[in-house]
Image 1 (tube, helix red, strand yellow):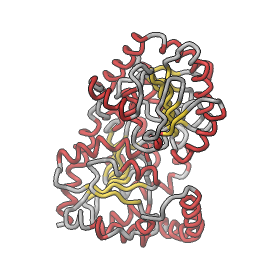
Image 2 (cartoon, rainbow, N blue to C red; image 1 turned 90 degrees about the vertical axis):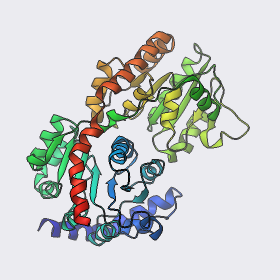
Image 3 (cartoon, rainbow, N blue to C red; image 1 turned 60 degrees about the horizontal axis):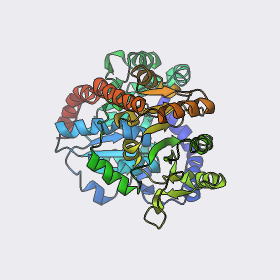
Length: 436
């Protein structure tokens, strides 16, 4: 009865889903390439790479989930080097990151959760297993996977403080969906408790820790650092402040703080990386309005090069880790405005001191660990951000110590990918036997 009601609701809202998707595509000037994949029509060229090989289908909705699952993909390829990995996403930005991951043999858009679309996609891909990252709960996709005897696993699962009451309120809705999963690998004991309370079978729930801790440490030797500086045309003398994954309301605060800091730190240079590259024009207008010279990343091959007191506005995807590795100090966005924060471990793994604002409710555990390890500092408002930046920019030893603490934190907290694979491996083998 539940799935019948769900299918009826999908049919009723289908026109709105399609109109919204077309509007987003047109309004952002994006291509309709891949639109067929959203209805389960996967190009023959992609299918030929995985035909008869029992691929593992990994679904990561957008950028954050795609970045988080990278350690698991590496470990999966280490244990199953001949098994193809199909990586899907919902968003265009997520797909842009997915195509840069070497372990992903085929990258597709995730189909809309219409029964006919997911059934067709599963038939064509013929996976030995499907893996959903974090809380990607699509009822028809999971139901049709089970019907085909395909094991389904949730990895890096988490239930945030804000979403838990909503999930619990509708546990009668989520319980039959969670029952479709063969295993649920959660980030923490509390996440495990919450998913069971929502309706997951307790015997299938495991605590495998957070995959985001398994980011490889990216410490640059002098030659690699020089090569990256040349790539971004950054003179050696510049001291780099990177503001990564910023949102509306944060860029203005960062740029105004930067303008005040330049009076005391003339060698300072700002790298500004909006979370959504399509906002680059909006952010460019803001910087220009402050009278600060800037260069877009996409225009770095032109005649203008970055200089002290200027800004490199990054309007591309997939370069944040390189820029973190070059940074003297990093501010992680989504935290000065009530978005909930972004992954602090990316700059920590690059040995960069990490600063972040008060709104970290989506990364509460990670932010507490970063502070406890002495790898970063939290501030409460714009004035606090400026104060912390002044202190760190004036103290090279403090910056170095925080960076070293970040590397140590990443080394000590790793191993989640191996724990996940210990749970997943028998299910892949089971799915492979079914496929044969």
